[in-house]
Length: 275
Image (cartoon, rainbow, N blue to C red):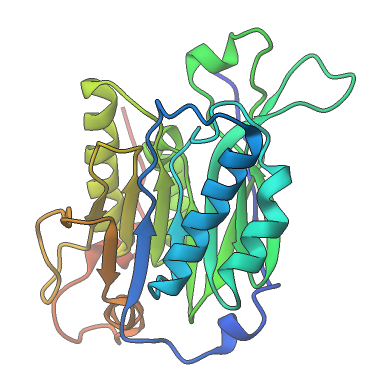
C-alpha cells in the first residue's frame, strides 16, 4: 500500500478572520448543484457559479461549500476571480475538486480551491478512488492538507474518500480542528452510506462539526459532537443552510480538564498494540 506523507499547513493568510472574536454561530451553505445540468455555453456555467456565491453571501452565509466534481470536468481557474469578488470579505468558499492537468504531464490532479482571507488556495485530492487512480490519464494523489483559520477556529476540507481515513482523523485531532467540510460527488447507496458513517465518526472523535455537501437532489447533512448541549441526530434542513454552534464547539475544546462531561475523544491515548 502506498505510504502517504502529509504536509499539514495552517493557512496564515486569513488575516482579520483569524483574529476576530468567535461568533455564536456560523452559517454554512451547501450549494444545490444538479450534476446532470448541461449549460448551453461556458459563460452560462461561469455566471451560475459566481451567482451561487453571490446569493449565499447576500443571504448571510459564512461558508459556501460546493460538491465535488460539480464542474463536470471544466477547469475552475476561470471563475476564481469572479467568485472572490462575489464572496466579499471574511468568507470561506470551497470549490469541490475538478481535473487539473499541467502541460507535458501524463497524469492529472483532482484539484479543489478554497477561498480564505481573500486568497485562493489550491489543494489536490489526497485519496483518489480506484477508478481515478487507474483512469486514462490517472489521477495523481496530492500530498498537502491545508488547515484554514476561520473565525477563531480551524477548518479542514476533505474529500469523501479522505474523511473515511482514520490516520487523517488522528492528525486533525491533534491539531484541534473544529469544522470539517466534505464536498461529495454523486454516489450510489453504498458510497453515500460510507460518507455518512465516516462523517458521524469524525464528529465524535474530533469534537467537530462535519458538513457533507453532495449534489442535489441528495440532501446535505450536519454531524455534531455527541456531547451534552449538541443535537445528537444528523441534521438535514429543508433548505441547504446549516447553523453551526460555533462558539460551543470552540468552548468544548477550551474547557478545562475535569469540568463538565468527560471528553475522551479529545484526550491523547498512550498504549501499545500487541499480538
